[in-house]
Amino acid sequence: MMGAALAVLAGVVIGTWFRPAATTQAPPAATIPAAVAVAPTGVAAPAAVLETPPGAAVAEPAPNTDATPAVLAGPADASELSRLRARGLDIPVKGFSAPQLSDNYTQGRAGGALHEALDIMAPRGTPVLAVEDGPIAKLFLSKPGGITLYQFDPSGEFAYYYAHLDGYADGIAEGGKVRKGQVIGYVGSTGNGSPDAPHLHFAIYKLGPEKQWWRGTPINPFLVWRDAKP
Image (tube, rainbow, N blue to C red):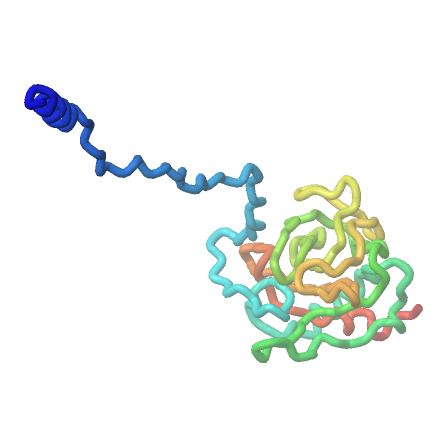
């Protein structure tokens, strides 16, 4: 009996020695991958670049004004008006005659500025005509005036400014010459023009001695045609 008891006791002790200890280490936590930021495949279109005349110290016009050349002096004298009348300038919008024009030259604009131009309301796409022969001095995209065109007279004394165009006519290019009555563009509302009121913003400037297309003395276009016959 004693031998059997000792054998049982030895088995218990040996079993205790060789029993694997209970593990206290927790299983490794699952790794959650961080969210991956994916760059968009599309590339945003660059903002429109507005051209600035070289050396021009001209402040950006207020949002509701037209991008007309900087004023050197004003107003123009009677002799300049007489010379323009003698040229027999064409009305710059096809289908219009002098009695249909309204004088809005002195209308106020934002910031107390004057309009200093002639607005001719017409359906979008109506042809815009060169008022006389002369070279195209500049094709210019501006925030207020939109698609614009600057034309000089043959002698380089005056500049004619056409703004809010819907586009240029085929073949129009800087440095090219246009003929009186030639289609140079189309009435629109680009720039700050109202989409519901397409029109041509037309201005005349007497150029300074430097012949800079962005600077001149304003002349009221309405007065050029005021007494003209239909």
